[in-house]
Image (cartoon, rainbow over all chains, first blue to last red; front, side):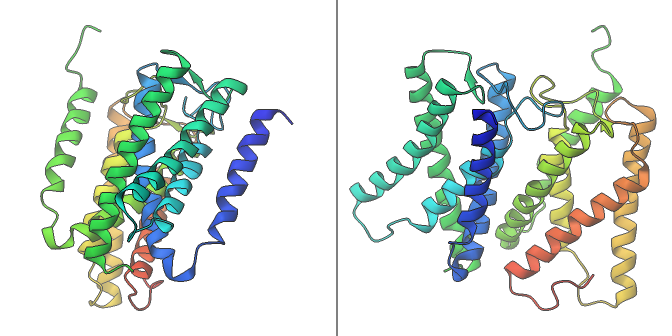
Length: 160
Length: 162
């Protein structure tokens, strides 16, 4: 088994397994967070590949798309689900920022790891540093907008 | 490319504009429900669209993001979710079973027919081993699954009924 396939399978398994740790009363909140973040990663990653910023040499659907599937479809949305479920609503501004920073860093350094050590993802433009800065900024924006949406949605739909 | 205003680009541009106009016809009070339906639909269409193209059952010769993606981003991310929004929000849930079946049957058939005509006359979509009734079946299944999730989400009764 190559390192790429190992990461694909384990990322898939971790995402599925973490569903069982979601408390039952939070299912609806988790579901809408998951879908919301998917709606971000999909167009964003297609745009990045189309503009030639990243490539995915090893991927799940080589004929149908140039975009890596499992990470964008399951893994990053799942990280966002846990970001929402564990969000410290009553904490201070600094702790909230720290919460953002930890979860965003988790996604960013996973991307960096795959970019450096595997053929799953390959940045085509810029240095590793500029790539890191870019992913930090974009993920912060995705997380912020998605959380604003989730706040609006839970208020309208009476989610706990 | 000599012929810039081909029938394909006219149809695709029209569909993009139509989708953005359609968003303004969603009732403001139901905006959260519409968002849920939209997001749920794209969860199914993303993976199904990839599988269908990966196995070569059909292809989209003229598409947007043609370098990055061989599936139809417009259809999967905008058209079908928006159809699904209006389909489910206007579903005649309190009418008799006959009315509901007729509603389901008519709307899915109209869109299957439109796709069939587009397949015949343009290069937007080409069937290989795909048949028109597979479009009918897959579209009904996706919309039905979204409807089940929608009813479960809003704690309605009889979530599996048509």
